[in-house]
Length: 360
Image 1: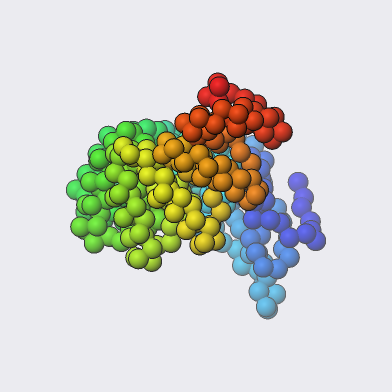
Image 2: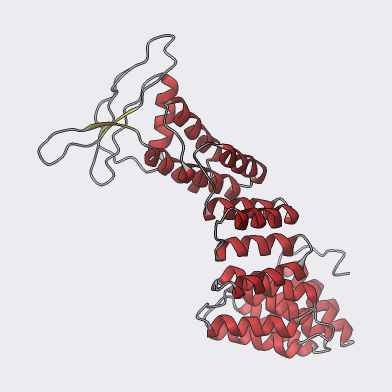
């Protein structure tokens, strides 16, 4: 094999993929210059039967023209795993860790955290938990706050809220302090697992421990209030976000609007007020939020308001879906506007939305 200098600067994603390819060939030489044009050089080649492939990195020449050689360190592998994770290449990220072990380079906690984050972000929650257990059983290594937080996030995606609670307890027993990201992950796990009351208890526990909430913990708490029928508490939390310097985002507003819609007595006026506040703050409501506002208006008998919200949605360039149309139809029906309800089907056809049973 022979590599010569190239005139193109490789992208970050090229480096880890190229190194894996070279490793399979039996030799690797990878220049890691990131700011100036660099070249890829073959430094060594394994002989047949050689099971130990030494990967050496040749850095770009310094100002004196001297090239430095060094063996790869954990930080190099960690960076590769992180880069692959950003592109969704979780299988290749796993191979990087395997190569790391073959090269007698011991993975550290950062390595495990990077790979776990890559796996959980790409839907591999079960493998994330397996890797976490491997980290816990590795002599000389111990999970840190990030490790636990990522593992709890995996529990959330895997609908394992009991396991998430267990990990928080283990974390505290081990003397590892949770942070706002830990709590946002476990609150989401509980909220998605049908335990909204537990999520609100965790939010209170977080605040009592002196941890300042972020947009994710507040949003999870507001969503839990929605499921508990606590619309007033949901609005209070939304107000607290702004007063504590945490700007509410679309998901936070959406959860608050949904709480108004699902309140024992639908709070249409409050939902309309939240929609107006969003627009005033420069946020772009999505079709889910518009639908929830129309639903609240319909339940309150405000069909004119629901109609105005639908027109506002279209004027904003947000394409209505079947739920949005169904919310408008329901508002017309409750207002006994039968003719207008029938006209919605024509608007659906014009908008390219196929009628669904929920509309009929």
